Length: 81
Image (cartoon, rainbow, N blue to C red; front, side, top):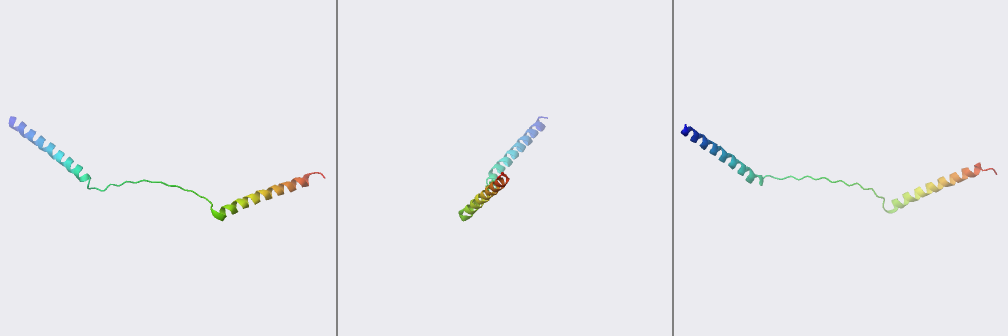
């Protein structure tokens, strides 16, 4: 019985040593594997530059001024006079 127990202990030690060696091999081999890093960033910006920006502002202002003149004319027509 003692002989069987000793053999079992030897097998358990051998299995533990194999697992440890396997773990050490994985640790050592990890440095050889490529690493991958991913990141993401997005920015969206819309600006008007140069003469296009000025034209847009001018058109908007002229449109508003035209609406005001039209409103003023309509109001004057409604006044008794």
